[in-house]
Length: 278
Image 1: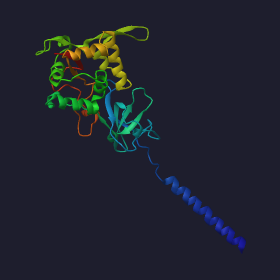
Image 2 (image 1 turned 90 degrees about the vertical axis):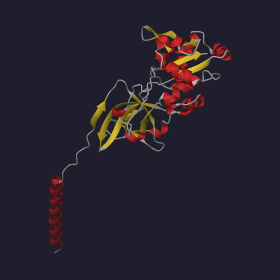
Image 3 (image 1 turned 180 degrees about the vertical axis):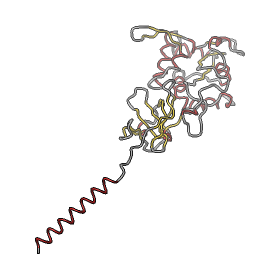
């Protein structure tokens, strides 16, 4: 009797296993989510900053592993070159300057640097506050540290920003103008040398704002405008005009999508400018 029960139970278990295998074979395999690219442009790469103050992750290119936490990169400039849709959400492909941190992150974790139009300021104090606090002005702050005794003049800054660089030495309303952003020096490349101005170096990507300001200092020193010389000019009554766009955006859509980022000048400004005048 016991042997009979064992056989019956064996038949039942075998049958259940067979049914289970059959049902499993009939279950549809869940398809992997696809990555759909909706925008891509490697040149120029748009600049974004870390907007989230909480844990926010960068995923690898297959979305299988979190590889970086944006919380650890509060001051990093991110270069965005692709917008994709994955799992019904918008992600950006981004990288830091060196490429040591790169991958995909949800669009709400970062936001584009946005400049304020020069027409929006009313006074020197108003403009200086913008230079000292706005996220888009990291490079301006680093340059201002090279000239701690400079008096920033808003009207001069705006006038210089609207002037083509070839005509910077003749800004209307000023009798003596020194166009610092036009100063040049030679740089060594891989087997070649090239000449760049301060203006061109400001518009060239660098690891950090301090590194970019270091390039500016090298050109100033090379042309005789070291700290001692600059302080002497400030004592003579020269004021500083500074406008740094750093190739940042002037406007963007509600969500900051790359396709809505506008790099065109809307306030009559020309390009990055650094001048002394009285």
